[in-house]
Image 1 (tube, rainbow, N blue to C red):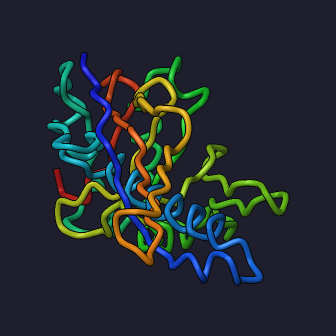
Image 2 (tube, rainbow, N blue to C red):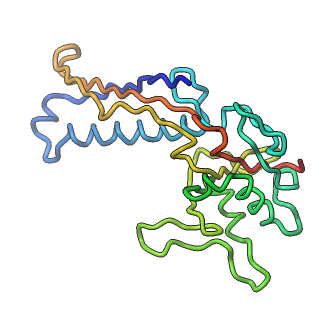
Image 3 (tube, helix red, strand yellow):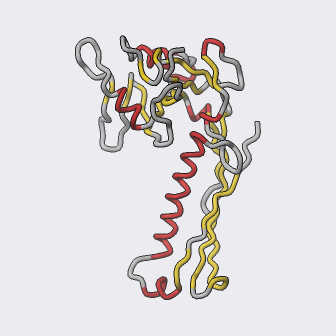
Length: 222
């Protein structure tokens, strides 16, 4: 397995006068904005990246019906209806997804989905009228679904015909992130006077290392 680290790059600029006269720390503000932009690009790549000059996302790998799963593919479980959950007992698909994962990986597993998929799942109720979605118990906690944490990822696709909109797995064991610690900033006050350039780089890579540890829910009849 190879996970080469690719480079994220940015070069914001500010005039020296602004840096000297500003009440706020402009350099720190620029660094925080760049870090936010890098984090958004990393998050998108970890889900959908094609592996070309960026990490390879777990949705970019070949997928296969979990009943016929083989190494090198990520198994999926169908919802039973194209672009939606089945009309009757829709939450059964989530149960099938959970138990498609081996017990060794279920202990630390999480659901990963976007807000559109969450809006569907949050409406599921038991026969007694209780929601199966549990809100976070603390302000900094995570919501849970069937006693497993839920992580919201904006880059997960919205439910549509044949979409892979919900993932479930032990991502710590299933997905590896190769991340050089810290961001490197080279301050250049000479190349573009009167501007000071902040040549900012970060190296990061990633990919699936254990194809057993991640399963997907496919919004399809089969």
